[in-house]
Image 1: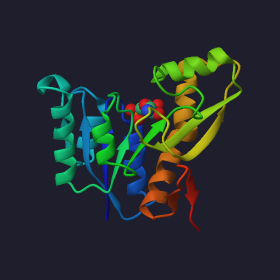
Image 2: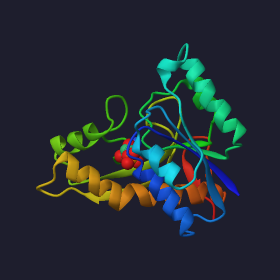
Image 3: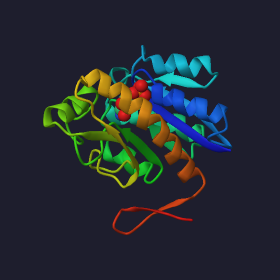
Length: 209
Ligand code: GRF
């Protein structure tokens, strides 16, 4: 069994997509062994609970500092022996030590075609506001490995979504999730689980047949 840990802060629709796709066998021989949220009221925690998935909330303010907060997360996932960590809407900037600890074992889903509308300041609705403001005709989503620079790690999969004339940031956010995020997150997990990708020296992801 491939053991997945998920970090969340919000609604958890991406978490739900992983749960559903494990249940319907789109992701085979895998299980979510733990869900960690930094927010007590994250609906994602309820989704985990409803699906009998072990879950816990660690709040930064309950720890002496950020390092201690991150160490608690590492300890939790070490105990669960995770093979892969998925950042699924985790709204905390994680430190380089944490990232190093899970080098090539941690992925993130971002709601744009990176490098557009990514990096510092581009989170949540701001990503879609940026796309609408620039007038792009296509946006989309990207799954990438997490490295020290925000949203700059090796890109695993991207999928484009058309921007419509009457889109609002909210409607675009919803369509990017429905048409791209849930699907490519699932594909990326399968690719990693089945050892179908490798990272080159230049930090590109190449597919192995
Ligand atoms: C998604 O748009 C994801 O791309 C971004 O945060 C959002 C999380 O949504 N990183 P949800 O909590 O999975 O519904």
